[in-house]
Image 1 (tube, rainbow, N blue to C red):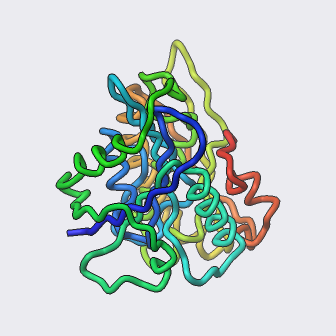
Image 2 (image 1 turned 30 degrees about the vertical axis):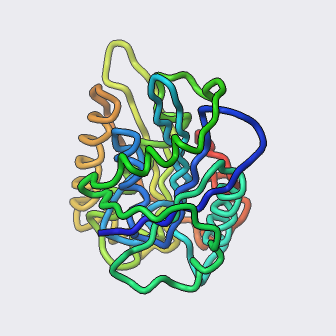
Amino acid sequence: MITLSVVVLYLDGESNAGYVAVLGKPNVGKSTLANQMIGQKLSIVTDKPQTTRHGVLGICSGPEYQMILYDTPGVLDKKMHKLDSMMMKNVRIAALNADCVLVLVDACKVPEKWYEKFTDVDEVIPVSAKYGHGVDDVKDWILSKLLTGPPYYPMDIVSEHPERFFVAEIVREKIFMQYRNEVPYVCQVNVVNYKTRTTAKDFIQVEIVVEKESRKIILIGKGGKALKILATAARLDVEDFLQKKVFLEVEVKVKENWRQDEGLLRYYGYGGQIRAL
């Protein structure tokens, strides 16, 4: 069971729609909780830590409320690359701009020093995001903090991110599931072409960026077999997400030290906004 420590931050203004930042160390269940609350899978989920890189904005609307959940990357104590520093900056901005903050703590582990800064805890709620236990209690707590006012978004949408963003995330999830060790962490996935076609399947071209030729060889596999398996698994999930058939083309490119290139990282959307490549 995971214990969910809830920290409340109040901002000016009245609204029954509010922004909720979901924070915590890597692999404590932030994305699983966000998906449960929204009612569908928006954030990718794997058993590997630090799967989430971009903050994923999910919108949970009801007849009399709207909660905007910001699923953030796991908090890192040690930043190895410029990518890590930019992700942690986005986590801080999300916490400061939120109406309230959910901090997830693994109840099976001793809380780390990072959590000591959250001293003004409003309530502690035990929850198992995987099985949905306690999720309604978390929703009730959030709703108790939101005031009256108009919604920020149309009530029938679940995210403001473009479809391209979710296609790239699905491909990245499949990389985490198929490959081991460091390989998933050196990959950046971009949708470089997305053509909607009325008389044929939509065409989606995806590039996987790695830092070394050796990683490219691993991703492609002998005779291209590994990349073909990856593309097929991704295509099936993309079709399920988009609810239509697509032609998915995946290629691998090498860009040395992309995780240290601030300009490139901003182009990839790590500057705080999702860029529709």
